[in-house]
Length: 283
Image 1 (cartoon, rainbow, N blue to C red):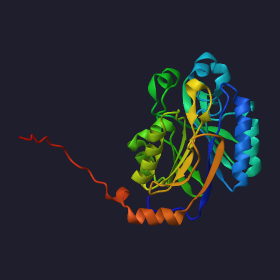
Image 2 (image 1 turned 60 degrees about the vertical axis):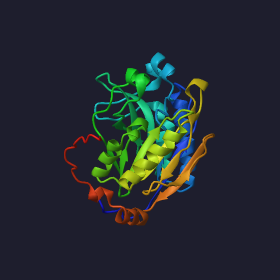
Image 3 (image 1 turned 60 degrees about the horizontal axis):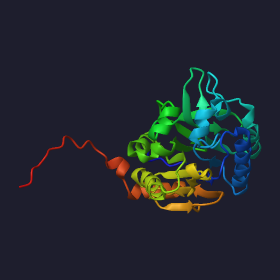
Image 4 (image 1 turned 90 degrees about the vertical axis):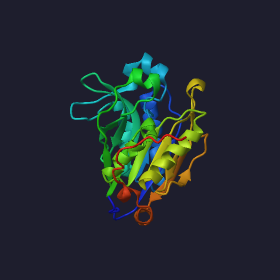
């Protein structure tokens, strides 16, 4: 847990406006944004929750065929609508994490993080475990396992939006040795305070980097508030986008800084069982 990676890793968090139900269009948009991130030196790019279909429950309810990506028995995703994204990942040698609605062979529909690796292969990497509100619970089946992504010696826990509102989700990643936590998200207008507290807190709770991506703009009934950011292991934003407008923000995860913070703030080592609680009545 306390062994830092050997080298730094430059990452990008993206905010943009996908179109509901338009997977090929959104994959092409993602490909352009990944190219911009690669131009800025990023080796890992994180895009928002459900970005490939857009986070738009009315469309997700109305047209599953247009909004879902089929998953093969081995977890692969071969859908041709992702060709542009696969190509840029391969050509620029960039790892991509992007949100999607997946359909498994057994019929399960999940809100998931898709990994597109540097060979251009797309796989189902993580299914959201903690679904938010009646809309998501009506649409999706919750995931049953956590996931840690290995990139250039960095151990990076995967979460999706509401997962990151639960301290135990980020802590499970830290307990698995995570140096960072990747969180594709979909925060609507009016939720900026919670958005800015949760992921800074997960970074500080676990002395790890957090990469937060979010959609921006969109349908007035489902309009998102950006704020894509990378938080350092003390919880401060290393870089943060505005609340409006398309943007790619880039930061470098630094193993020296990670080690410094973990030496100074030893919460991960200091934890212990706190025992039973007792109730004391005041007079």
